[in-house]
Image (cartoon, rainbow, N blue to C red; front, side, top):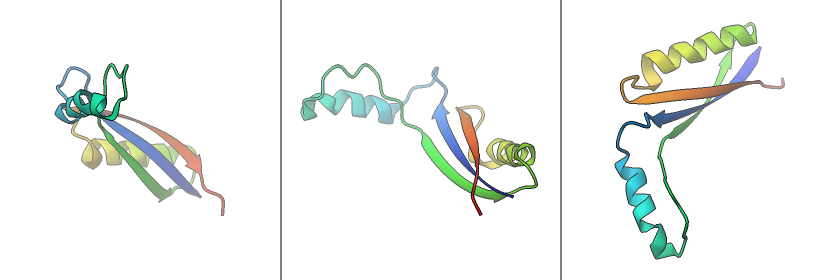
Length: 85
């Protein structure tokens, strides 16, 4: 069965986010007011083959924990969807 995973990776809230701070600081140049905070992360789209959704989740967890994230600095969440044949 084919699945797709949509993975969002964000820095831990306790860590500084210089990219987000720079974006927030410069919003007023675009006349966008009321922005209280901006955090910048990554979004990863993965298509994978697995016998079932549980196995697909295991693969995504393994990929995130072994390669895609730095657990010291980042956390993640994901959604798995079956792909139509």
